[in-house]
Length: 232
Length: 232
DNA sequence: GCGGCTTCTTGATAATTATCAAACAGCTTT
DNA sequence: AAAGCTGTTTGATAATTATCAAGAAGCCGC
Image (cartoon, rainbow over all chains, first blue to last red; front, top):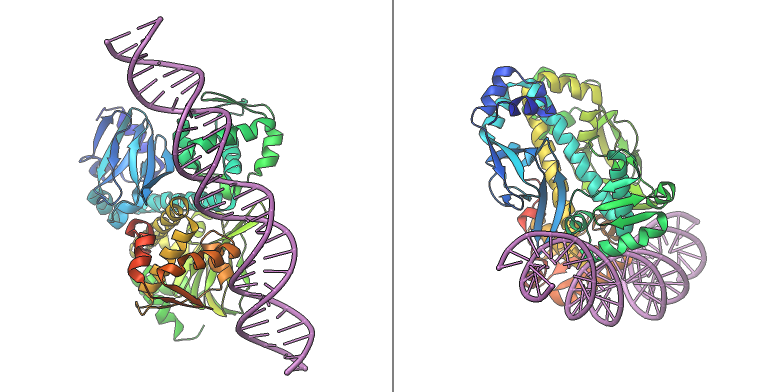
């Protein structure tokens, strides 16, 4: 592990409050590894041996059923994934693969559980993290069940628009195939959904999306904090 | 509160491990109330003032967006709901209504949070409960994104079949309109989905569903523990 | 029993989404 | 520059799901 990585991880909300010696105990057996893109880090059904932290790059959480595949979330630095499986010592429900060249911190599950038992601050942070994740998942389910694919795309664009500083340009950080899977549609349909949004000022140029009529787009999308706002 | 209710609640996994005096402190300001069916207990967007426990009856968690409504879960006794909102002191993401005449225990959120801070066993239980809920939500999302409506119905029936003792008869505990919303389809489509399943030995008689060709149904449904098994 | 009610079902049609096939664009490799 | 990728788009068609309208079945109060 590079010496300048630890402070970054320490600042993660999950670890920020815990006692220094407990932090060290969690981190001592952890290791940080570099992965190229498209490497499968974990597979659904596997035992949850490690808590993973995306330190750099990005990770896609996806799942299979019936021979079909879907994307459930994209994890950006610095954040953990599969915390729930680790805490329950249960099989992963999702697989994970790197999207970009990434550095992943892997902490043995036992250590997470052991320190959780005796560090109340850490326990508190874990509960907050889990609650956020639960709520994000609930929002995703609402998004999927209550909106059409065009609406999901419109809301996704508006969310990115806010996060990227309302400049009028949204840069897609993931390729369109992955975006389609995340939004619960086929790549062909994503392409058509972009066309449908053209009258609402959505101009596509590769991964660069211009939003020229945000009020119109907003009227179509009808964003709702109880479905859209992540991390609350 | 009836004196014989407390032990039942005490046995809830969430409360089982905690110290007696802490349990009393959580419960002292709580109150147990009886509600007729179809009473809206909480509304999405409201502040999370109480942790709710379904002691008797049943509760539907549902949500709106875009003028549409969907059902996210049905809660049976004895179980809590909206724990994540309580812990984060954040607005509810879902509304809740009674489906049957129900008795609901309401515990002020502050008390839950206060005791959580100092009872490590309680904290542990909360983490387990949250993890289960997160994973159930993830399973629901997989179910919704990866399966057709007929497949979702088939898997629902098989799950109920197991839970109701594999007798060949499944009794629907909720009306078909609610089931349709839970499975993410319209009532009309649910009716048609049942017809589609007739060749697989699914015979509908009101709320009584007979499964006469379970192996065939299973072959169609392709149930998967990583999508279906609740509470793991 | 008879309205009156709700729930559920059926039919016809429309909207949404997926599939299959082919073309195209932007890459890299040779 | 040509060939071969991969990712994306477009077109044609099919499958899935929703909507609208009407009918059937069950339930309740009187």
